[in-house]
Image (cartoon, rainbow, N blue to C red; front, side):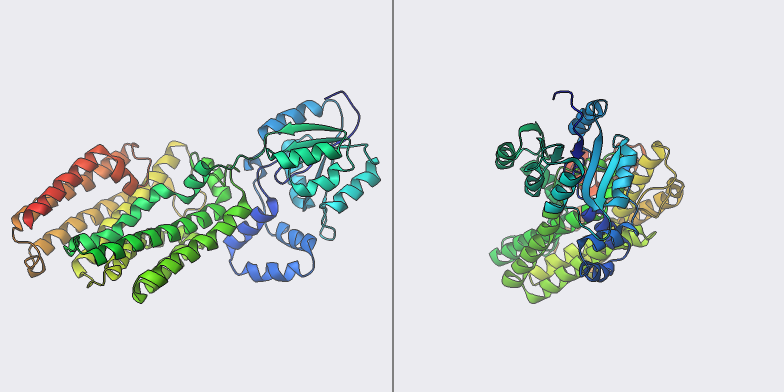
Length: 474
């Protein structure tokens, strides 16, 4: 662009950053207390500008970790040497000041002030009053910015949408294009955590344990339960990611999650949550026994409570995680209309508590390696490892004890004709639990323990041997 003294006015949400500060701040406030939703509805009755101000005075955002449009930011640094840069945004002035201070390029800041929501026509009118029609350049990314580009000399379009680029070109004297947010199917697959659906294979365990793998009705029930839990879990994963934006951005790997990195639109993510949840409930209500729906709703309520509160409560978080794994097994039992097994539930509680504690230990060990004292969003410190590790190992060994007691009980006699083979499953499980903790202790387990178990070759071999032994015991 030619050397000019025309002010360069830059939009914030979606343009300078791949995010929306109103949504981010509202989510941050709701994370503190979900009942703020009612206050927000009241604030909104007095206008969007009032809503933004009321949220802004209650929330502090970490502007250093926001997902900036680095290509546009690099260009702005060059332009800042040639002419004045102005941050012009519909976000509240409190947030705009914080971002401007972080970026260090803007000589002036124009934003919503608690009374006026500076968006669209109001933004265009104010800029014309300050600088004159066609006497400023403007960078934006949405269709609402067309109202500003109609009065600007140069339209800087930070979007890949061809229709928006074409319309902006028709309105302004000149146009400059920058790449916008690239939402892709791959990013949605990552956000929905489809690889985590592996955990929902637990609903098939009651089918296998009851030796009903050849009953078509039972298989159909288990498959529908698997899909229903998968949809429900994906909805909760989206909620988790939206509530944990700041904490994820401070994490060395979670910062690359699609919402934290600004690769997916926050509004779309919010809309996807009820769609996934409703689809999950509809499947359960139409095709599965009524008791399954109650189990699913308990799972949903527990996971939402975990996302808002329990994940930050020491020890209760790992107990809740173990419970969520066990609920899947209960759901699988209800889906095939079978009786709950005390032995299976007891085994599940101990083995999944061990894995839940193992997951926390992996996080703490990674934090210790990076020299962190506290972990954002967690109630633990790295020095808690000395307490958690023996707790987790002991829980894993207790699951082996429960299995041994089950094999020696009358309950196993009706299902297995050669229980002597089952005894060999105990050392297999003992080996796997011990090895999982050793691998994690040496910093070689970066996945969720269950995902690790599915992907790890040694775990696969151990599982195959256990499967053969169970088959021989029939």
